[in-house]
Image 1 (cartoon, rainbow, N blue to C red):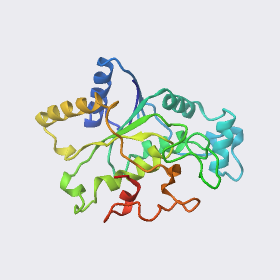
Image 2: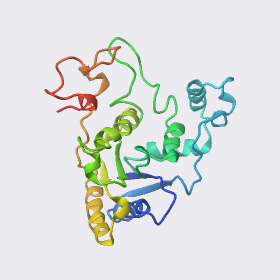
Image 3: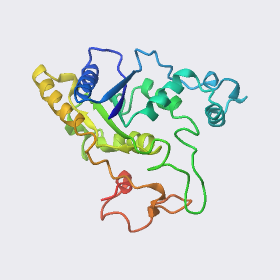
Length: 259
């Protein structure tokens, strides 16, 4: 297995840094190849601007056509091209980050904004009467698996159906479905650590054991059963789920997961 770890935390000695190190050592010891994109250590540029597209930047700047033109011409900046090549190399992608303000750190979102360029991660495939492009279960990253390893400061009870912060599945849905599944990756259930700011050394030992177990079963873990866009479940072109396909009482984000 070839694994890319995209890691976003400013402190190497943090819990996130330790989990990243455990992943590297565990996977390598099992005979897998591992590459790490340490975004803070790389001083990753987190904002999209005209400099990303060179001579293919429109004036005034329109990000989508500029991005697609530069990608098609092989003219994206070397840092972006390198990350795209890592994604194409990998069988599995691990995203290691803390949940900050209900989402990923800005530097990681900036990685997505720049690396998931037009004609690479979106804007691919044919649009006709039966298909709406290659996305949500299709696309250039089809055949790869992705998992979020996320640390959360608050207790688990805060992130449940009746918890004040809402269900963790709902908070992660935009990343799972809208970023990872969109270009074709299979998305595995996340590895979430709650009460991260109060974790003792003894608790970390238990966490390490559980994380190692997840890492060694990445190839066999069943992915979240998101509905494929072009499988017949959605009306084209409205992309509304057809009536009667949902389980009784199911709504919201859960409509887009098969039983």
